[in-house]
Length: 278
Image 1 (cartoon, helix red, strand yellow):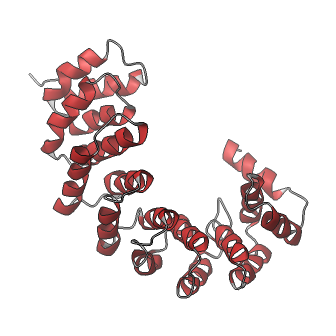
Image 2 (image 1 turned 90 degrees about the vertical axis):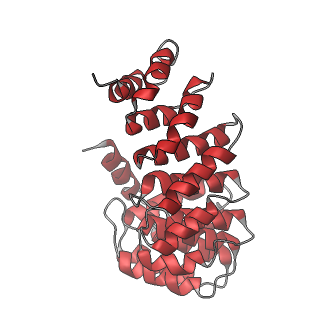
């Protein structure tokens, strides 16, 4: 049995009733133990948990609705249970929900379900004033190949919030295989506009570089050389070098080998892929 299976089995072995776990989760909403309780409910995945979560989603109390959504989004892990029915409840809730916390949870839940029916209602929320809602929307739309979802992610990759830009760029660059000029241009914009060495800014830039490299966009070469030549190099630029397979990068990768110790195997793979062909 794998470590993950052991973990889920331990959750299912919790002796507390569904009713008791729901009650505790509603009193622990602001604490870390809230998510421990949610994971126990999710992992059971029986009709009892589905029914309890469904009833919570019909509550007049936003905390109860939020808990219901959090349970339904991952119900039955690792084997999902009632996915279609869970999606239908979320779709119905989208029509009337106004609470930012619940809307954010709905976005994440659609992302966990991978339900394409959520694309249209989520896209309508891409400009919501709450950054938490917009971040949930990014997670809900990532992995969706629908043109509407992709355009929304492109828009969100320009968001004023760094975390939202980061996740939207990751979604565009690495979570979908679609390769269009619009996607490549959006990624290149992040390479140009994300200036600075702050962790999140550098990560956004790195995700954009990787997304461009995966799509073999040669505009990535010069900024990638600059990124690999600076004094602080993360994994993403090296991954990008491995993907683009361009001999122009070989000298700077060899120089990087003198001090970069984050992942020697990855660096060797990048050097091999960029080695000049004689």
